Length: 516
Image (cartoon, rainbow, N blue to C red; front, side):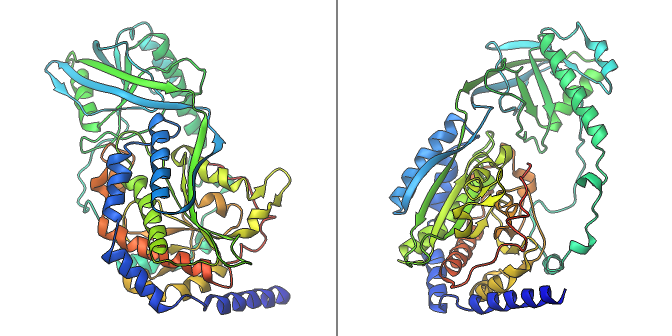
């Protein structure tokens, strides 16, 4: 125990001494001045949303976006701009070509709807009566057998709208930020299986019932399945289970709970509700997930092969243009790299931007990159593992950076503590020892590497992401300018520091496969 403490203390002191060697305050001033006086944020924001459009994984629109982004990165003067395939993707490509849905009886009303990704198409314009499939058990399905041919099936409501008195957009309070600085490791409730109070048995039963219902609906030759999801008359976005080579799934639409609820209530009262639909989706055999890269090469003979990585996911769902999720992250990372490039900064280490593919389907892009760092089969680090200096990730909308999650790596704190002094005036003050999940830094955290997600003001993120409303309008341009300045500063700090944030003690031996 004493030997461990001495070693830990020595490592901490070494890290602290190295981390004091941050770049000059003059450079910090130049970065902030470039970020605010010569900002390209608005231009990048329009490019990443209006120009690129939606970017569903492996879709033709995603491939188009990758080509356009590589061209843009080349135009900005970065080195080694490219797109690379990193993961096999069984779903293949899928794009929306036409979506129309309206209630025609008892009166006409056009609806805002969004097809489920990888669902099928109708045979042109089709019309049919609506039926609510109200089932709780497999036995309930038998009530509908033989009655669904030519019908439009409304799945039962799973959520109801309730009035909220909370603001639509919000920033973290000082009290909330202070609470983030407290270490929660001791109070985490760990239960067998890691699911807490989650009833896995009930979940499996529900999923089995859903599979049985979907099979019966398709076997009965229903015209379409409609599910209520999303509110404020804004449909959300999800996908269906599908692999290349399987029969085309039945058409499925997502409809706001207000419109879905209206039709369900009318049917339950005995009204005859009819709809007309035209859904045209295109399947393509593109079974690859691609990442886009560019960089500013390192200049130090001993350190230039080490990498400071800046990342965000380029893919989006198909309803909007992926403004908050996650064009915002791509915009910030591209602008941060531009700031350093236009200032003529010469980093010791290479600073690389990675715009990931397939994040929404399983962190495939970042996991594909991580495969080149660690040999999972033989349980050993690959050469690039030891060249991984830092990863900074953005994927929580366009809110202002307030700090960073340190992922329980105590050895990282002295570095960020030293680096953050010139950017505290921008509101970057919180070093949280805790973890956060569900985005690309996890691919590297699983290997014990220094990879971190920013703490961001939430704004209206939860209301808009994964919906058709996720567009340019969801971007807070002033916040993005600040985020880009912070990212550029932290990147050059990590690139030029003589020391490096250590990997977590016990790694890479403790590395485990990331399951998403």
